Length: 269
Ligand SMILES: Nc1ncnc2c1ncn2[C@@H]1O[C@H](COP(=O)(O)OP(=O)(O)OP(=O)(O)O)[C@@H](O)[C@H]1O
Ligand SMILES: [Mg+2]
Image (cartoon, helix red, strand yellow):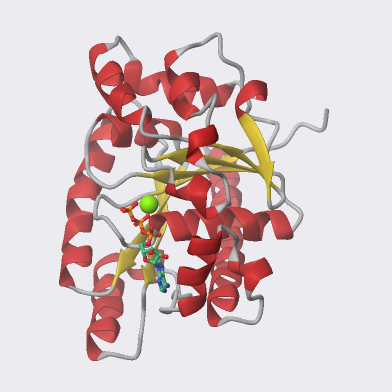
């Protein structure tokens, strides 16, 4: 087997409705279109990522909840192939896993342990997360190499990020010291003053961590999520298709540069 250097990216923000799932779905499929081998993991009990890729969550027989809870469940029996990527689904049973994680020794490290079994198989593993803070979020923060944080326009999205960053710092001081934020991306952007101000506030606060690519409001994305297809196939000429391609390009460049800097850092250590 061709051994790959796997990068695990979690798309996260504790605020609901900011475009996490839409971003995880289009990042996964855009990476696949560029020839990378991609696994997308749905880590939201609502199963929106699975549904957005056309998978009916009533059909879930082995999802991420089973992989986390039961070491005997294999990745092989949990993987579905859709739109050029591999997908591990979720359904409402995942909500009960949250309690299991909190009451089990090292429960918050289980996803990371399970992912370590398939490091080397994929170029990218992209995890979609549910809103809110808690055991599921901590599980993700322990499992990821990088966080991609979508922020929607408006003051609340911007302010909410601070709580997430506090959690990130705690995890870095403890169980995942190399966790990094690969960037913030403005979503649901439009031509309003509020949209411009949110972007500027993000830049002022987080500087170069803010992606220049913005995801504009697009009807095509709404339609795509209803139909269960990425915009790249449903409406390849849409602004959404262009925006997500651009973000993916910028993200890959940033990851490459982070790797190089890391290698340089190690060389000089
Ligand atoms: N750029 C966009 N333009 C138009 N609609 C969008 C855009 N991004 C996301 N949406 C729509 O907004 C809604 C919320 O998006 P999404 O589900 O990706 O957010 P989320 O952060 O994953 O939400 P949750 O926290 O509930 O999981 C969905 O109906 C989605 O289709
Ligand atoms: Mg979602």
